[in-house]
Length: 246
Image (cartoon, rainbow, N blue to C red; front, side, top):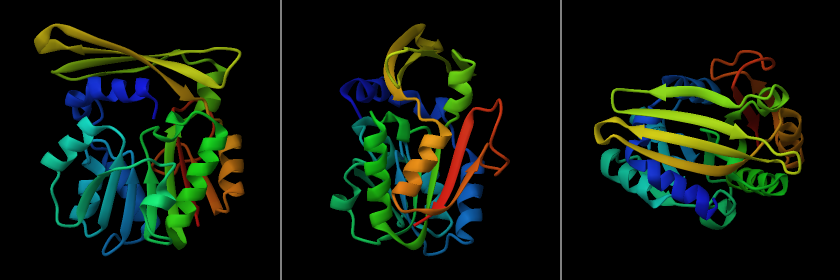
């Protein structure tokens, strides 16, 4: 995570759970892939405020959540306490150094976290690290946005997220000379009549490139979906969801 990305998440951390509330379909997807959560060891990369990690732990999994943003981790530790759950400061490029070989039954990386890396080389490094800490046959589960669709149209504005407390507006700024795109946001905090504006770079990682990187990292049984319901990938949809085995 770059300094700019870290500053972005710090600036919205107080309202993160309003912007990105727990999505029950993520939990259902993990359960479907693992068959059972009881006694499963799971690493949640980019855990943020710990909503998904807490739900997994509550259903019997032993979960470690990592994130690079101290403000988000503080909220997770304060608000999502469970005996099966721990939160650590951790970098997805350093998994082999931070965890034991073949430690986890599953590694999760949801919420468009993967594309905060700066290059396909870094993505491959992350995938190789994930495979190293997975048990044989363990599941790597990913979710980013569908940059095939976003870049081909191009999609310049994502759906607005609005609650009684906030309004979150998101734009993409494209450039012809880089694979990075500018992710521009405006968070309107209604009670304070205040707006927090940011722009952070994201890697526009297409599905074919992602599948190649996953294969090159040594994973098998690679499945790509349009959403956590496991519907067929392709066309005008925003999510890109992947499952594969180590």
